Every structure is written in structure tokens, then in C-alpha cells.
Length: 106
Image 1 (tube, rainbow, N blue to C red):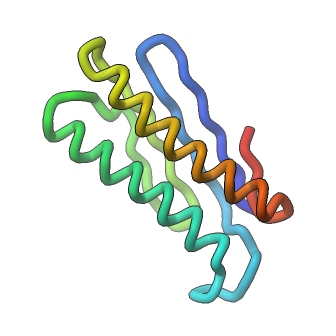
Image 2: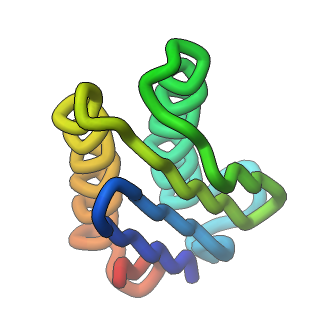
């Protein structure tokens, strides 16, 4: 199962995605593919935002079965960054609704 922890506090956002869904065989797991697509789209957006000076990545850890992003945003970028974060969480929640035995958000 994949577990997702997401938090918003003060001027920071935290996203931790951990584990493999176990829906299908490696390379054929549609739940894992969906989680990866949503999560990596967000990761790449945050890397672009950091390059543009709109955020600071406090933690950026990516390895097999584990992603941890801790993002510090600035007042001028708050609305934009929170919007992208919310879109990522919405995508993951939709996957949880369809496949609750393979992904859980907390």
C-alpha cells in the first residue's frame, strides 16, 4: 500500500509519499502509475518554482518507493504554490476513492 502524508503549516508544505501500491506487477501497476504521474508532475513543478526563486525546497528526497518534499513558500508565491499543492492532493484523493485498498492519505 502507498501512504501519503500531507501537511500545511505557516509558510511550509510537506508531502511524503511512501510505499508501493501492490495493485499489479511491477511495470503493470496502474495505481502506482497514477500516483507517480500526479506526484512527479508536482515535484517537477516545484523544481521549476525553485529555479524561478518562488520557493525554497527544504527537503527533496526521491528514491524507490519514497518521495519527501518540504517546501517553504514566500508571500508573493503562496496562492500559486498552494494551488499546485491542492491539485496534487486532489489527484491523490481521487485515486484513494477509486482504490482505497492500495493508497491512503492522512
